[in-house]
Amino acid sequence: MENKMKSNILRFCKDKKSISIFWFIILLPCLDLILVKAQWKLGLNPNLSFVLAGMSAGHIPQILLFWFLPIYTLILCSDSYIQDVKTGVNNLIISRKGKRAYLLNNFYSSFLIPFLVMFIALLINLILAWIVNSNGHESSGLLEMNNPKNELFSFSQQHPLLINVIFLINVSFFTGLAGLLGLSISMIFPDRKYTYPLAFFIWFILVALPNHTITMVMQPFTEYDYNYVISSWLFNFIILFIITIVAYIYKEKTDEL
Image (cartoon, rainbow, N blue to C red; front, side, top):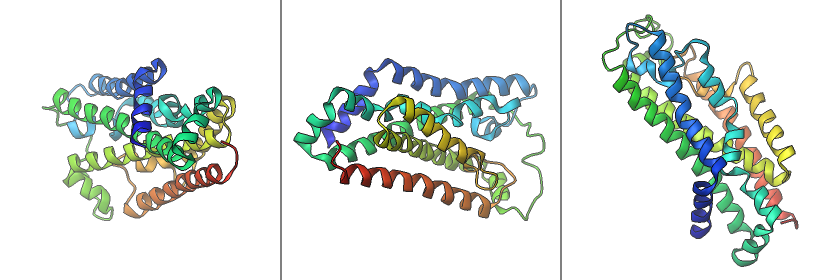
């Protein structure tokens, strides 16, 4: 299992498309920081300069980053199963290590690699936000608003850096789940012409849901209180978890390799 994990990481490091997407994910939050710096002439508070706070006009970097996550994760690593099927590598590994070990390693890699890539990208952005806007105090009244009925927002005002770190980890976690979504679809439909559009379609449904949109768990300093954020978190997690479990059981039980 450990060797297969290393093999997946090595494949990621050597694949030009994967590295290109890696740098795209790293640089997109940096673009948002540039837009924020240009927009807020007086200097935005560093906590609000973080890409997840969504303070750039039009939110274009956030839209590009989060709406297409399954596509990015598929290119990063999650469509490796499709490549294995095409080359017959999956049969060789399964014959030596067993189907369960092969499947579990693919699931581990498809969660861990996207998680780490997004974690690194957001951590770099958070550090740069504090460096670039270290003297920034502008918040457009967001951090001065008095809304005691919204406990999450009040907590965010009192502990802005902590809430950014919490959402950073949470977004990285859901990026890992997006990787599992892509892998799950590829295992059921091991053909890129089906996998990519279907993974995007399912993810976009989660983005577009009016009351439980997955973007609700990706942005701090919003008007949503604990009950809305937690219910949205649970709803989206359960949907993505069920898809992952169904794909795993289907692949483990079926005779098809």
